[in-house]
Structure formats: C-alpha cells, structure tokens
Image (spheres, rainbow, N blue to C red):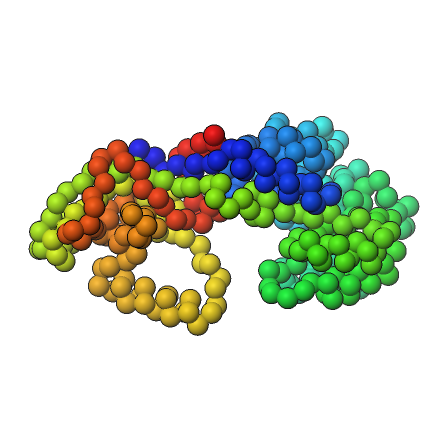
Length: 355
C-alpha cells in the first residue's frame, strides 16, 4: 500500500554501462532525493560503474554517500565560510576526499585559511548567472594561487555549469575557455554540465591539451526510457450518487460515479510537483485550462487508469489521494495497482524495487 518506483534492473543497468562507456571521465551527479532512487543506491551504482569521482549537491549530502563510494566527492554548491562546509575537519579521511567548488574570489583565501590542504575547483560564471567568477576574478584567482606556488595538487580544475537552453553551447564554452587559458591556472581539467555528446567531441578536438569531464544526473540515472514505472495501490472504493458528500471538506459528488482512494499524497510530493519550465503557448494554454478546472473542483491527478489520467475528487491528503471515476468507468479492485506520472526529482517514494 505504498507509492513504489519499479525499475527494470537489466534495462537500467545496461543503460548505465552504455552511458558511462560513451562519456569518458564521467562524474555521476547524486543530489536531492537521488533522482527518486535514493543517494545511497546511486553511490553504490557509481562504485559498480567504476568511476573515480561523484558529485553531490550540498555538503550535508556527503554523509549519505561517503560510506558507499570510495572515490573523490565533488560538492556542486559553492563553498562558503559558514554552515556545514566548516564542519569538515581539516585533514580528516573524509575531508581529503572532498573537492569543494569555489565561486568567489574571497572564498579562495577563506577556504585555504580554513584548510590549507583543501582540494577545490574554480567555477567560472556562465550565461546562467547562478554562481561563478568573472573573467577578471578568474585571473586574480590564478595570480593568488601562483603566489602560493600554483597549488597544482589542490586545484582540481575549472567548473562550467551551462544552461539547458536550446542551441549549441560550443560558442559560449570557447569564450569561457579563452578566460580559463588567460588565467594561467595549473590545471587542464574542465568540469562541464549539460553538453551534448557532439559538443563534448567538438570541444575535446578544439582543446586537445584539456580534459573535459561531463557531470551527468538526469541523462544517466533517468535516461533509460521504459525502465521505470511508478505505481500506487488502490486502498478503497466507494460508489456515490450525485450530491453525496465526501472528503475532508464535505464536497458533493457532481454526478454518479466512484470515489477511489489510492496510496500517495502530499508527503510523497503528489500535488506539489515542481514547475516543468515549458514556456510554449500550448503549455500556457494548458495551465490556464487547469486553472479553470481548479475553480470548480475538477483537477487532473497524476494517477492513470486504463491509460487516462483521472481527476482528484479533492486535494490530496498526506499519504493518500481521493479520485473521482465517473459512472461507466472500470473500477479497479482494492489491492490493484495504478500508474502514476510524476517528476522523479520531486517525489519521495515509499519503496524502490529493482528487478
């Protein structure tokens, strides 16, 4: 009676191996809810893939993966002189495995003052404008490191976090590489995100003295189409006539049908899905249409029965949801499973079953 992520193990594992083989220097990204699989499981799978480095989102996630993966641990969120980053004891076995991301000039000095042996990457800001050093700041960071002897054993490379926008990133990366080269850094490793295979090949050919290491999360863990399926369990069925009252809010049934109670609610992320980011006219029209349905209490749910997404009878509860099936629809039996369409990164599953 849970919300379950079902995984076709052979298909998923074949995809993971093929993806890793096609991306030399791959850095699997493990963050948040582990793309629905959990951080621990993905850390073990990274060990199985034979990679030497994985990336986590924040310093707080290190504890969940460090005992399941023996290699280096890149933290994607930039280091700051406060919070969990300062809880890592300089020189400890775990700390020696961590690679911090540094995105501000003042933090280069602050990190080295806190831990003189710290390993780190310098992040160059991209068109995303999220984190990173400007071209001038990158040169200043290079001069600062040069004054300390270059710190070649500690500087692990330069990070470029690119947007998901359509079109080629090659032109932008070429401009950024000009800044990297001008900074005179003692490194030839570039950590990149969101580059296509063709873009990686083009850049590798253009800069043969540099190694481009792709960081991948969604494409790696969720790229095997058809390998995953999310299911909920039917917990109860209640036939209703028009006007019958049901639910927390005493809502009335709009017509004859069935109230179907299924597992999965707000505690799982049901009804709280993150925005998809689709800005097309069609997507905007769909949003307006859903808004109109909201006003009269008919809201499409992520639960599907016989290939059709069914309506919420009322807003989802914490661990269950009430759906409305109109008369004439097939009513699943208690104990049957129904398909659920969710964003894996925004959903907490009760169980993950890998065949």
